[in-house]
Length: 437
Ligand code: IMP
Image 1: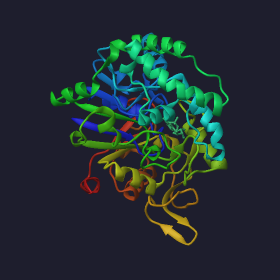
Image 2: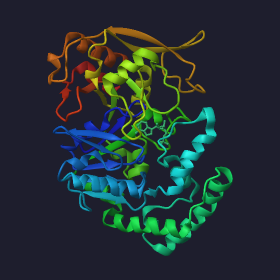
Image 3: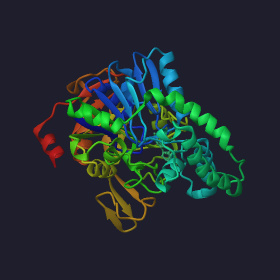
Image 4: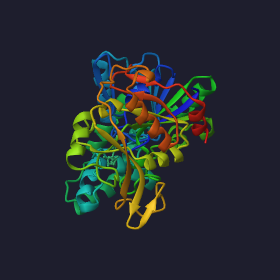
């Protein structure tokens, strides 16, 4: 796998952490290229649970190079907390196995405050952000008043950049949000001290990843959040502020698009979403609660209960399509054990209008009603199954029906949180043809 992209194909929380951790065994370099500590990638190794927010999930494998690219919004406090937490648990983390781009934008205290305050102003239009300062940090990047990691490493330069940024942010905090202002010298002291601690990790990560690739190293790109939260192709404005799919890699990692050989989507056997925004196949009431309990669907970053619903084949075709996915991995299949009947979304309706594909050109998808096809469930525990043939017949029928409806081959199933709880699938000519499209 010379250069492979692994991305979330739904609204995030698809189980990417576990899959990346597993695939990292065969990679040399694992790269995060977008998002920030809004992500929560859970990895379970030998019964031990690790939740990673910023550091690539490859860190749990000795000897791998882990990279935080320039497209990531970095909260230095969170970065150092995560490094310390891993070290305390005996994981080796230093400037040789973890690199941080000098060009990554820094999340400051004012970004977090503005993120939370802005949500209060949005009223019914609130996004339900993680409150980690992601949106305001990317907004400053685009407005060219942000500070990158490298800007913090030279104190006088940092003072002048931060002075300019804080002049505007303090006016906003005080006059619009009614919050206390932040003191320039105090913030400068705090963030330059933190930056000093970051220094051993900092470098030109784009050059390092390109060199590694050209020397024959295998590079794995770890997407955070999900394709439906992509700022360009997701359910705008209820999205995060970065390009969460394959589209984020060239800009966010400094890696040429044409070097990416494979793209693999990750999606649950059902679907979840945290925060606000449209989710056509959401199940309210008892069914949603049942999925939530079965899947322990609570946010890894904020602890919020996740909204739960059924897999939506149109939504999946849409995200796998615009990312050019060669295949996908279905996670949390074990969670569906015990459901008598499992619906899958196969179409949308709005009044007299019906849709057989994701209506990307529509203003919104809030009012869509989903048309479902129902598949019979299975009752056997599948968490210890390791070969596809050993799965209950109805479970295999579910997987194959979903694959047919989505039109992209499923290359692996995940049936539990542990590294080895996976079921690889053998490629069949028909599935390979579907993947080739
Ligand atoms: P932000 O990324 O904190 O600005 O939040 C924007 C939207 O993306 C909100 O609906 C969040 O709940 C959602 N979001 C951000 N990160 C994640 C994630 O890692 N998993 C799932 N949803 C996320």
